[in-house]
Image 1 (cartoon, rainbow, N blue to C red):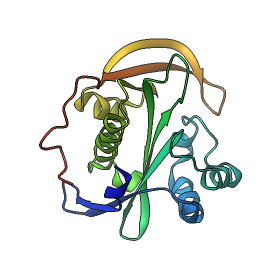
Image 2: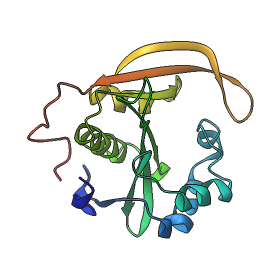
Image 3: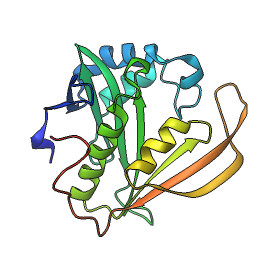
Length: 191
């Protein structure tokens, strides 16, 4: 499936977006992308993406079999980062975890949905059976984006997570069964 990249698609407002798997050459631009994410949003992410060393580690230790990162670019800048996390063995090897972050200027334009659908296609090609995402409950737009493409809430864990400010947050787990899914003829976006 990676041979299909880079690929360019149009958003709902006809903005052209190019998708590609992250490489070590993307380190500087990826760090710039995460610096544009508001602190309020960054504190809800699982890793300290404002820390340049975190981004450097991601870009220098790429293993597409473990974590498959897909980047989205519009107008010369990275506007989205999505990752498909997989385990090569063990009792969760049939599952994949999805994480998605979108530039504030490109939210509600379809970038998140585009990235989610793209990762779902990659997961199907990798013969995964189920996908899941963990979200802070007040990330309403993100929850809706996942639900629109077939994810369902499977757990609501009150006070289960702590953000970077050490504040308790409710954690939602959403999941989608892709084991019997057929590759649709059309998607929200045409590739």
